Length: 245
Image (cartoon, rainbow, N blue to C red; front, side, top):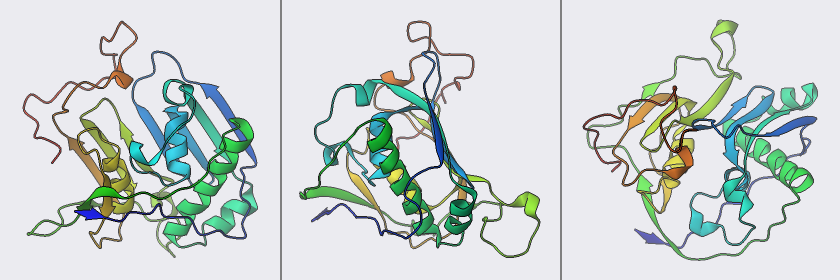
């Protein structure tokens, strides 16, 4: 479908817009996979390029929504652990789920400005999109067994401490406690899709999932340390996976 797509701006809150402390280190050259996870009181990334941080911070879903920038935002990768003040973390947990994520995005925006010296401005453009919808037989997603951190009662040991996705090579993705908005965002970034994916599932839960598909081409981002040879933690390829679609 072709629609007039405008980047969704975030809703500001009165909560602090910066992390209390952040550790930023270059990733190891032999690091396998990438990860971005939100814990109850922190954000942690593994082997993430600055471009991915920009896309997360400003809710950018596809490459054609981001123009300009130095070449190092694609090539340099970072391990980051950014912690919130205890009072800020407590206030964030009282927000609705979508606003909790937006609050973390605000804090990453400040991190990018303060530590990476990145400046942005906004414009609008018309782009083609895809819509993520349930199949004719309904959703087959597996609801996460972890209890959301803001749910009353229940066993505290079963409360989820983080949510997000991790990719170990192009063609394999794992989700833990992730919502369908998060899934649509990640699908938008796959090279096979090439368009923004809008979440129209109507599903509001958190889900655990594993996706395996046949990539159109190997992704150089996931080369191993030995000239592209797979590392010890690289998952073996599925001999007959379907296409992503």
